[in-house]
Amino acid sequence: MKTTLFKIGNVCGMLAPVLWAWAIIFCGSLRPEYSHFTQYISELGERGSFTEFIMRYAAFVPTGLMHMAFAAFLYVAFKDSPLATFAAILLAINGIARIGAGMFPCEVGCALPRLLLSQKLHSLSAGVGFFALIGASFLWGILFRRYQSLRGLSAYSVVSGCLGLVLLALMSWSAELRAGTGLYERLSTGVLSLWILVFAARLWWLKAYSVAPGAG
Image 1 (cartoon, rainbow, N blue to C red):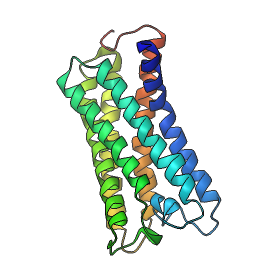
Image 2 (image 1 turned 180 degrees about the vertical axis):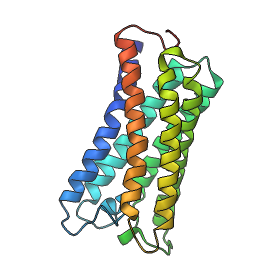
Image 3 (image 1 turned 90 degrees about the horizontal axis):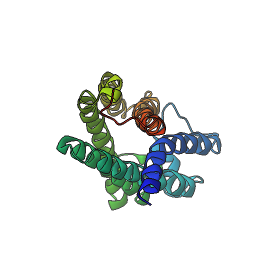
């Protein structure tokens, strides 16, 4: 039973980024007027939109739950390390925040001023999720140096966190004019999602070949 739960948590880490990317592409294809270059991802799930239900309940909520499952797997797999526990908690917070972003949709255009409670909670959830995931990538980058079989991911994790943060800053900077805002957001979430996929896939490979994380 424990082994099965381990596998489920690990698989969730690999599938969540794929489902997230698919949902964004699919929902965008259903709305010819929608621009991936200028518009937020959240606008695919904005209140009253044609793609609201799909984006909220087939993307935000399920991938958030999958991130939480992957975080739980990491918590158990690296339970001897306090820093790993904190890094896993950050991933779980990201999952909870993504669920929150799905449960509380933004208004049309996800634009300022954010007067309604749902819009405020959506923006707060999205911000917390991004920063928690960026923080997790930095911490795991430090942790990977302690494990011989994961050391190769250390620099990649730190670079992913840096890119995610820079692209998120560019998204915020361009928000007023919507000059590439959607592109920056997609690149940021894309880099961070790919990091989760690579991390989870590496752990799956190690398990498949019966290699412990600390082994050479």
